[in-house]
Length: 111
Image (tube, rainbow, N blue to C red; front, side, top):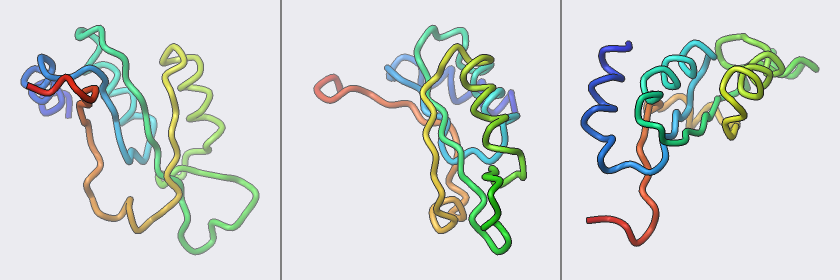
């Protein structure tokens, strides 16, 4: 996974102001994104998808991997220096298989 992310980061870095690790289902993916973009010095946001399938109506909110949301949020707050956290509870979006690393540019700065 790191080889793939490293190649994406290397090619996209000159055109990116902000990295977004989107529709991730476990903290290991978020950690891989953090490690891959670390050398760019650019900020990043993490977006996890929540389990919302059958049986997920309990009081314990979890990521699609089954990890507790509280544990993922703790990692974001401590392990990633307070990276902004986004949550996506919709399986229809998460099920698209289009999660990954995206580079965002500010409006008005496109070549």
